[in-house]
Length: 294
Image (cartoon, rainbow, N blue to C red; front, side, top):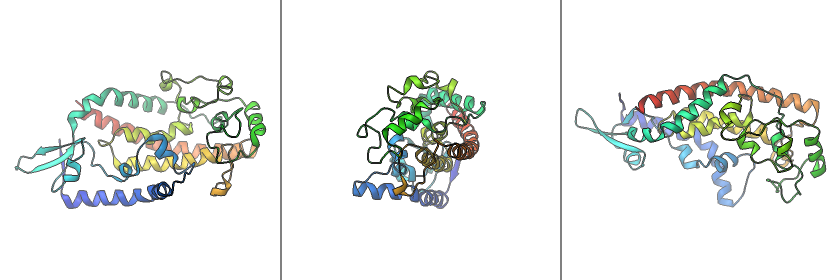
Protein backbone atom coordinates (compact mmCIF):
# COMPACT_ATOMS: atom_id res chain seq x y z
CA UNK A 1 0.00 0.00 0.00
CA UNK A 2 2.77 2.42 0.91
CA UNK A 3 5.50 3.86 -1.29
CA UNK A 4 8.50 4.90 0.81
CA UNK A 5 10.79 7.73 -0.30
CA UNK A 6 14.26 8.14 1.16
CA UNK A 7 15.09 11.53 2.61
CA UNK A 8 17.44 12.61 -0.18
CA UNK A 9 14.78 11.72 -2.76
CA UNK A 10 11.83 13.50 -1.17
CA UNK A 11 13.87 16.58 -0.26
CA UNK A 12 14.97 16.89 -3.87
CA UNK A 13 11.34 16.69 -4.99
CA UNK A 14 10.28 19.26 -2.40
CA UNK A 15 13.06 21.64 -3.50
CA UNK A 16 12.16 21.24 -7.17
CA UNK A 17 8.52 22.01 -6.41
CA UNK A 18 9.46 25.09 -4.39
CA UNK A 19 11.74 26.40 -7.13
CA UNK A 20 9.01 25.94 -9.70
CA UNK A 21 6.41 27.68 -7.50
CA UNK A 22 8.52 30.63 -6.35
CA UNK A 23 8.13 32.72 -9.53
CA UNK A 24 4.35 32.45 -9.13
CA UNK A 25 4.42 33.83 -5.59
CA UNK A 26 7.32 36.32 -5.67
CA UNK A 27 5.28 39.22 -7.03
CA UNK A 28 2.45 38.59 -4.60
CA UNK A 29 4.81 38.64 -1.62
CA UNK A 30 6.60 41.78 -2.81
CA UNK A 31 3.34 43.66 -3.41
CA UNK A 32 1.95 42.57 -0.06
CA UNK A 33 5.00 44.06 1.62
CA UNK A 34 4.37 47.36 -0.19
CA UNK A 35 0.62 47.33 0.37
CA UNK A 36 -0.07 47.15 -3.38
CA UNK A 37 -2.75 45.27 -5.34
CA UNK A 38 -2.69 43.70 -8.81
CA UNK A 39 -5.99 42.77 -10.50
CA UNK A 40 -4.48 39.83 -12.39
CA UNK A 41 -1.61 38.39 -10.37
CA UNK A 42 -3.22 38.70 -6.93
CA UNK A 43 -6.59 37.27 -7.91
CA UNK A 44 -5.86 33.57 -7.51
CA UNK A 45 -4.47 34.07 -4.01
CA UNK A 46 -7.34 36.26 -2.87
CA UNK A 47 -10.25 34.48 -4.53
CA UNK A 48 -9.19 30.90 -3.78
CA UNK A 49 -7.58 31.63 -0.41
CA UNK A 50 -4.53 29.43 -0.94
CA UNK A 51 -1.48 31.22 0.41
CA UNK A 52 1.95 31.50 -1.24
CA UNK A 53 3.39 29.35 1.58
CA UNK A 54 0.92 26.56 0.84
CA UNK A 55 1.50 26.76 -2.92
CA UNK A 56 5.25 26.41 -2.52
CA UNK A 57 4.96 23.42 -0.14
CA UNK A 58 5.33 20.06 -1.87
CA UNK A 59 3.23 17.12 -0.70
CA UNK A 60 4.11 13.51 -1.53
CA UNK A 61 0.45 12.55 -1.95
CA UNK A 62 -1.70 9.82 -0.47
CA UNK A 63 0.00 6.49 0.06
CA UNK A 64 3.56 7.86 0.08
CA UNK A 65 5.72 7.87 3.20
CA UNK A 66 8.71 10.11 3.89
CA UNK A 67 11.63 8.37 5.58
CA UNK A 68 14.32 10.16 7.55
CA UNK A 69 13.81 13.45 9.32
CA UNK A 70 10.39 14.60 8.13
CA UNK A 71 9.59 16.58 11.25
CA UNK A 72 8.33 19.59 9.24
CA UNK A 73 5.64 17.34 7.76
CA UNK A 74 4.90 15.54 11.01
CA UNK A 75 4.08 18.96 12.49
CA UNK A 76 1.28 19.45 9.94
CA UNK A 77 -2.14 18.44 11.18
CA UNK A 78 -2.93 16.41 8.08
CA UNK A 79 0.08 14.09 8.49
CA UNK A 80 0.68 11.05 10.69
CA UNK A 81 3.62 8.86 11.65
CA UNK A 82 3.68 5.22 10.52
CA UNK A 83 5.78 2.46 12.07
CA UNK A 84 7.50 0.41 9.35
CA UNK A 85 8.15 -3.33 9.52
CA UNK A 86 11.84 -2.71 10.18
CA UNK A 87 11.06 -0.55 13.21
CA UNK A 88 11.70 2.79 11.55
CA UNK A 89 9.13 5.59 11.59
CA UNK A 90 8.05 7.39 8.44
CA UNK A 91 5.59 10.24 7.87
CA UNK A 92 2.75 10.45 5.37
CA UNK A 93 -0.60 12.13 4.71
CA UNK A 94 -3.09 10.85 7.28
CA UNK A 95 -5.41 8.50 5.38
CA UNK A 96 -7.77 8.23 8.35
CA UNK A 97 -8.97 11.76 7.59
CA UNK A 98 -10.14 10.86 4.10
CA UNK A 99 -13.44 9.30 5.16
CA UNK A 100 -14.69 12.67 6.36
CA UNK A 101 -13.87 14.22 3.00
CA UNK A 102 -15.40 11.51 0.82
CA UNK A 103 -18.71 13.26 0.12
CA UNK A 104 -17.01 16.46 -0.97
CA UNK A 105 -14.50 14.61 -3.14
CA UNK A 106 -17.24 12.58 -4.81
CA UNK A 107 -19.21 15.76 -5.58
CA UNK A 108 -16.14 17.33 -7.18
CA UNK A 109 -15.33 14.16 -9.09
CA UNK A 110 -18.88 14.13 -10.44
CA UNK A 111 -18.61 17.76 -11.51
CA UNK A 112 -15.36 17.09 -13.35
CA UNK A 113 -16.74 13.98 -15.05
CA UNK A 114 -19.96 15.62 -16.20
CA UNK A 115 -18.11 18.67 -17.48
CA UNK A 116 -15.80 16.41 -19.49
CA UNK A 117 -18.79 14.84 -21.25
CA UNK A 118 -20.03 18.16 -22.66
CA UNK A 119 -19.05 20.05 -25.79
CA UNK A 120 -17.25 23.33 -25.13
CA UNK A 121 -19.33 26.43 -25.78
CA UNK A 122 -17.35 29.45 -26.93
CA UNK A 123 -19.99 32.14 -27.34
CA UNK A 124 -19.93 34.04 -24.03
CA UNK A 125 -17.12 36.45 -25.08
CA UNK A 126 -16.14 37.17 -21.47
CA UNK A 127 -19.19 39.34 -20.90
CA UNK A 128 -19.48 38.17 -17.30
CA UNK A 129 -16.95 40.85 -16.28
CA UNK A 130 -19.02 43.48 -18.07
CA UNK A 131 -22.16 42.25 -16.33
CA UNK A 132 -20.40 42.72 -12.98
CA UNK A 133 -20.20 46.50 -13.55
CA UNK A 134 -23.40 47.02 -15.55
CA UNK A 135 -25.21 50.23 -14.54
CA UNK A 136 -22.77 50.97 -11.72
CA UNK A 137 -21.16 54.30 -11.02
CA UNK A 138 -17.34 54.46 -11.36
CA UNK A 139 -16.82 54.27 -7.59
CA UNK A 140 -19.01 51.13 -7.34
CA UNK A 141 -17.16 48.90 -9.79
CA UNK A 142 -15.14 45.96 -8.46
CA UNK A 143 -11.75 47.24 -9.65
CA UNK A 144 -12.35 50.94 -9.11
CA UNK A 145 -8.63 51.72 -9.33
CA UNK A 146 -8.74 50.97 -13.05
CA UNK A 147 -10.80 53.00 -15.55
CA UNK A 148 -13.40 51.50 -17.82
CA UNK A 149 -12.15 51.53 -21.43
CA UNK A 150 -15.49 52.70 -22.81
CA UNK A 151 -16.73 54.57 -19.76
CA UNK A 152 -19.86 53.66 -17.84
CA UNK A 153 -22.31 54.40 -20.64
CA UNK A 154 -20.24 52.61 -23.26
CA UNK A 155 -19.86 49.59 -21.01
CA UNK A 156 -23.60 49.43 -20.40
CA UNK A 157 -24.22 49.69 -24.14
CA UNK A 158 -22.03 46.64 -24.83
CA UNK A 159 -24.00 44.57 -22.30
CA UNK A 160 -27.29 45.70 -23.80
CA UNK A 161 -26.14 44.83 -27.33
CA UNK A 162 -25.43 41.19 -26.45
CA UNK A 163 -27.18 38.15 -25.04
CA UNK A 164 -25.45 37.18 -21.79
CA UNK A 165 -24.80 33.42 -21.69
CA UNK A 166 -22.88 32.85 -18.46
CA UNK A 167 -23.24 29.28 -17.14
CA UNK A 168 -20.94 29.51 -14.10
CA UNK A 169 -22.50 30.12 -10.70
CA UNK A 170 -19.42 31.81 -9.22
CA UNK A 171 -19.29 34.34 -12.05
CA UNK A 172 -23.04 34.86 -12.23
CA UNK A 173 -23.36 35.56 -8.50
CA UNK A 174 -21.30 38.75 -8.98
CA UNK A 175 -23.59 40.13 -11.69
CA UNK A 176 -25.18 43.44 -10.76
CA UNK A 177 -28.90 43.29 -9.97
CA UNK A 178 -29.61 44.98 -13.29
CA UNK A 179 -27.50 42.48 -15.26
CA UNK A 180 -28.67 39.20 -13.71
CA UNK A 181 -32.09 39.13 -15.44
CA UNK A 182 -30.38 39.67 -18.80
CA UNK A 183 -28.55 36.33 -18.54
CA UNK A 184 -29.94 33.36 -20.47
CA UNK A 185 -29.44 31.16 -17.38
CA UNK A 186 -29.71 31.54 -13.62
CA UNK A 187 -26.93 29.23 -12.37
CA UNK A 188 -27.07 28.02 -8.77
CA UNK A 189 -24.91 25.72 -6.69
CA UNK A 190 -27.60 23.08 -7.07
CA UNK A 191 -27.48 23.27 -10.89
CA UNK A 192 -23.70 23.61 -11.16
CA UNK A 193 -23.06 20.01 -12.22
CA UNK A 194 -25.84 20.26 -14.81
CA UNK A 195 -24.61 23.52 -16.34
CA UNK A 196 -20.81 23.62 -16.11
CA UNK A 197 -19.17 23.28 -19.52
CA UNK A 198 -15.52 22.92 -20.58
CA UNK A 199 -15.26 26.12 -22.61
CA UNK A 200 -16.03 28.32 -19.61
CA UNK A 201 -13.07 30.37 -18.39
CA UNK A 202 -14.18 30.15 -14.79
CA UNK A 203 -14.74 26.39 -14.94
CA UNK A 204 -11.22 25.98 -16.27
CA UNK A 205 -9.75 28.38 -13.74
CA UNK A 206 -11.51 26.34 -11.03
CA UNK A 207 -9.42 23.29 -11.90
CA UNK A 208 -6.89 24.93 -9.61
CA UNK A 209 -9.49 24.97 -6.83
CA UNK A 210 -10.31 21.29 -7.32
CA UNK A 211 -6.59 20.42 -7.22
CA UNK A 212 -6.30 22.47 -4.01
CA UNK A 213 -9.15 20.51 -2.47
CA UNK A 214 -7.09 17.32 -2.79
CA UNK A 215 -4.14 18.64 -0.78
CA UNK A 216 -2.22 17.06 0.86
CA UNK A 217 -3.37 13.83 -0.81
CA UNK A 218 -3.16 14.90 -4.44
CA UNK A 219 -0.43 15.37 -7.03
CA UNK A 220 1.59 18.51 -6.24
CA UNK A 221 2.87 18.82 -9.81
CA UNK A 222 -0.72 18.78 -11.05
CA UNK A 223 -1.59 21.53 -8.58
CA UNK A 224 1.08 23.79 -10.09
CA UNK A 225 -0.02 22.88 -13.61
CA UNK A 226 -3.56 23.94 -12.71
CA UNK A 227 -2.28 27.14 -11.12
CA UNK A 228 -0.36 27.99 -14.29
CA UNK A 229 -3.47 27.52 -16.41
CA UNK A 230 -5.61 29.51 -13.96
CA UNK A 231 -3.10 32.37 -14.09
CA UNK A 232 -3.24 32.46 -17.89
CA UNK A 233 -7.04 32.22 -17.86
CA UNK A 234 -7.25 35.13 -15.44
CA UNK A 235 -5.09 37.20 -17.77
CA UNK A 236 -7.49 36.61 -20.66
CA UNK A 237 -10.42 37.24 -18.32
CA UNK A 238 -9.12 40.71 -17.51
CA UNK A 239 -7.84 41.54 -20.99
CA UNK A 240 -11.38 40.93 -22.25
CA UNK A 241 -12.93 42.81 -19.33
CA UNK A 242 -14.15 46.41 -19.61
CA UNK A 243 -11.16 47.74 -17.66
CA UNK A 244 -8.19 49.55 -19.19
CA UNK A 245 -5.12 47.68 -17.92
CA UNK A 246 -2.66 48.93 -20.54
CA UNK A 247 -0.62 50.59 -17.77
CA UNK A 248 0.09 47.06 -16.50
CA UNK A 249 1.14 45.87 -19.96
CA UNK A 250 -2.12 44.13 -20.90
CA UNK A 251 -3.49 44.93 -24.32
CA UNK A 252 -7.28 44.63 -24.34
CA UNK A 253 -9.16 41.95 -26.20
CA UNK A 254 -11.87 44.21 -27.60
CA UNK A 255 -14.80 41.81 -27.44
CA UNK A 256 -17.14 44.63 -28.45
CA UNK A 257 -15.74 44.24 -32.01
CA UNK A 258 -15.89 41.32 -34.43
CA UNK A 259 -12.10 41.09 -34.47
CA UNK A 260 -11.97 41.06 -30.67
CA UNK A 261 -14.58 38.34 -30.47
CA UNK A 262 -12.58 36.18 -32.88
CA UNK A 263 -9.41 36.71 -30.82
CA UNK A 264 -11.25 35.86 -27.61
CA UNK A 265 -12.68 32.63 -29.05
CA UNK A 266 -9.25 31.59 -30.33
CA UNK A 267 -7.67 32.09 -26.90
CA UNK A 268 -10.63 30.59 -25.09
CA UNK A 269 -10.42 27.46 -27.25
CA UNK A 270 -6.69 27.10 -26.54
CA UNK A 271 -7.32 27.33 -22.80
CA UNK A 272 -10.16 24.80 -23.06
CA UNK A 273 -7.92 22.32 -24.88
CA UNK A 274 -5.23 22.72 -22.25
CA UNK A 275 -7.83 22.36 -19.49
CA UNK A 276 -9.15 19.12 -20.97
CA UNK A 277 -5.86 17.36 -20.27
CA UNK A 278 -5.71 18.74 -16.74
CA UNK A 279 -9.31 17.78 -16.05
CA UNK A 280 -8.57 14.21 -17.14
CA UNK A 281 -5.55 14.08 -14.84
CA UNK A 282 -7.61 15.47 -11.96
CA UNK A 283 -10.23 12.78 -12.48
CA UNK A 284 -7.52 10.14 -12.25
CA UNK A 285 -6.14 11.74 -9.10
CA UNK A 286 -9.57 11.90 -7.47
CA UNK A 287 -10.15 8.25 -8.33
CA UNK A 288 -6.80 7.32 -6.81
CA UNK A 289 -7.45 9.19 -3.57
CA UNK A 290 -11.05 7.99 -3.29
CA UNK A 291 -9.85 4.41 -3.63
CA UNK A 292 -7.64 4.96 -0.59
CA UNK A 293 -10.48 6.55 1.38
CA UNK A 294 -11.99 3.11 1.98
